[in-house]
Length: 249
Ligand SMILES: C[S@@+](CC[C@H](N)C(=O)[O-])C[C@H]1O[C@@H](n2cnc3c(N)ncnc32)[C@H](O)[C@@H]1O
Image (cartoon, rainbow, N blue to C red; front, side, top):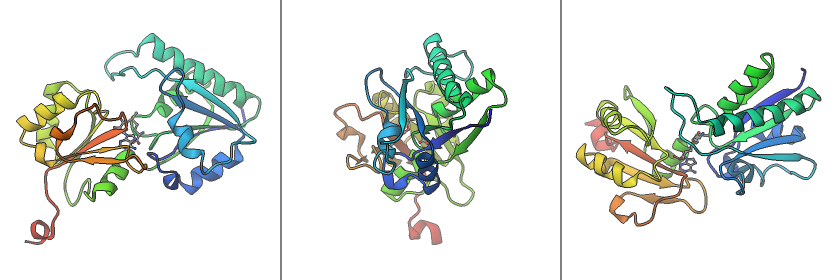
């Protein structure tokens, strides 16, 4: 096969954060296969690139990837495996005809992204498929920029974790690391607020919802949260302050 699959990070939502490299590759390719989280909804990755990539001459194929928890110690649900397989077959059918395919994915493909599952599934079917990863701006970087809080400085250690972690592992990570980035927090706010409070970290936790979009919200006091935040929400817990007073004294 001569054609290439490009797995492209779109950044977290602001079209100005789509990289030039991503735009150039997307403009050159005629096929875009895009993931969407709900059966009838729209693809977020697609909506991010739409303002910066003309779609008129492109074939767009949206594929539903069910939002079901995937654990590293057990086999994914059959529904999830089927979706990966269907996406892989769709991509391969274009590659076999000599068409390059772009698979845009939210943020960066290296962080909790469907892109790598697709990659592994495709390579399982066709080992020598040409795949190129194009990095994107991760959501946590956009959240950090929005609140002006660094993720790590000096010798600090960082943990990036899905908030769906078991409580004990979460407590352990909160104790061990200097900065903890909690992703997929939207369904776990009550539980997270309790655990953060128990670890005396509630005051250092900041939630950023839909960072980099015109719907962005920054929440510092979790008691202000009345409704469940949007799925695109991340909490940054930075233990050390980085004011001049702390840094230079
Ligand atoms: C499946 S993960 C995708 C992560 C993505 N690959 C990345 O590089 O950031 C989805 C999670 O990313 C975070 N996220 C994605 N977009 C975001 C945004 N615009 N603002 C805040 N968090 C976001 C949320 O924690 C969400 O639950």
